[in-house]
Image (tube, rainbow, N blue to C red; front, top):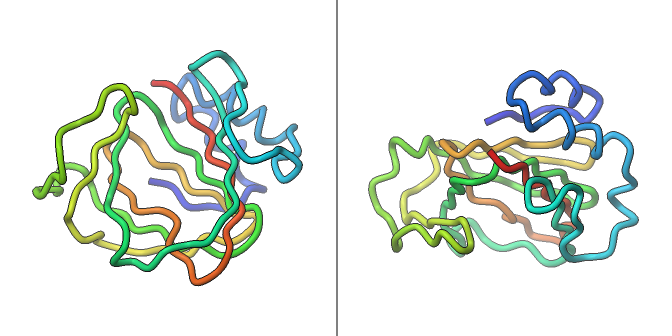
Length: 148
């Protein structure tokens, strides 16, 4: 898991071979101008999902993990809390892994919480369980999905 400012996002290029193209897209695109929904960057290997809507309470969400994608979550407007826990410490699955949706949910409590503001991003790898969209207000965000 990584939490940092968008000014430093280029430093993540070497972390995974697929990240370079996604980071170039993030640096060149006007993410805030994209309409809500899915936007292809490179087939199913890299795409961005844009959303704008109300957040939820910590107790209203579940930790989630993805096996096929790295998530780069970017808050465009609003303020969002994200919970985190290593997948290796998750012991209470809500259900099995859904390969079609590339998601599995866990009832475990996050080990830690972070606040992500506009101009910041969080990266979650397949070994990171995360609970996004916790906010008392409206959150406008982009999630860039990078196939592993």
